[in-house]
Amino acid sequence: MPAEISGTATAPRVEASTRILVVDDHEDNIEVLKVRLESWGYLTASAYNGADALRYVESTPPDLILLDVMMPEMDGNEVARRIKANTALPFIPIIMQTALDSTDSKVEGLEAGADDYITKPIDFAELKARLRSMLRIKRLQEALEEREKELLEVNQRLTYMSQTDALTGLDNRRHLNERIDEMFSHAKRLNEPFSLVMCDLDKFKSVNDTYGHQAGDEVLKQLSAILKEEAREIDRVGRYGGEEFMLLLPGTVLDAAVTFAERVRKRIEGHTFTFPGGTLTRTSSFGVAGWPHPKIEQCDDLVRTADDALYVAKETGRNKVVRFDGHEFNAHQASQDANAPARPDFGASEPGAAVPGT
Image (cartoon, rainbow, N blue to C red; front, side, top):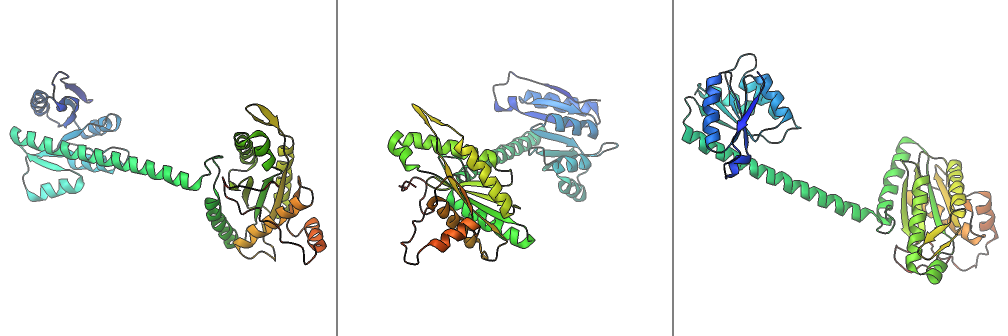
């Protein structure tokens, strides 16, 4: 027989919103309990066997279950065991009702998942007290779970904020450095290729000087969107500092990374940046490095060589992609006089810091 639901909605007490499932294979026992429970203001539902009880609990979890131990086919202990094993269900207190008052019987039920016991014939004053006790525990459990959920959400927000650049929504420099270490170590352990691309928007300072910082922020956000769209799901894209961005390309050989960077460069060159009151175009420069490479042994080497390649791209005309240790890179290095002044560090700025126009 399927579960039946009844109760009162007029009782002004807290119990009026509390549903209790009564499970017993004897209809008379159920009716006696329902009458008493509803007189106390509870809503009730009933099931006459274990299978019906489980179906009801899974579809409409009650606030508490009064469960008879001795039932045919599936006894109360098995019902309790299955309910407590179902991790999709909330905490539901189970009070076992039994004519067996032996310690062994109670131990078996408690080990199956019962939270409390009451013996037949039922003392209704005792039952009322046990119901309130179990429901109080349920409310405390629900409050604890809600608190834990709130703390988890706060921690997730804090983690996101600590790892994300506020303007662009990309990984920030700190998180990029953490990911580089992880991904580079993974690549070396599995002997898989790993490439790194540094991207710098050309003459960005003039955007802020001419159009204002709000326009500059819009340009950076649109550039970030382009980089994110061009990257794969497994790639990492982040703002490394100012108008400089870093892309981490796992499983990508150096030639493929250069091809990727060239595609992105062309897209940026052809893009019209829009902002309130105007539009503009800008080009970008790229430095690319990859592992394995005889001159790259550590993670820091990979970052340094990509940054060196970016510097060469800026020095030799901008709006180009330069690969570390490639022909253009080596030719530029060979042409440098030993006493030439040190180059500026394009990767030194953090988001929000003053960045020289390059």
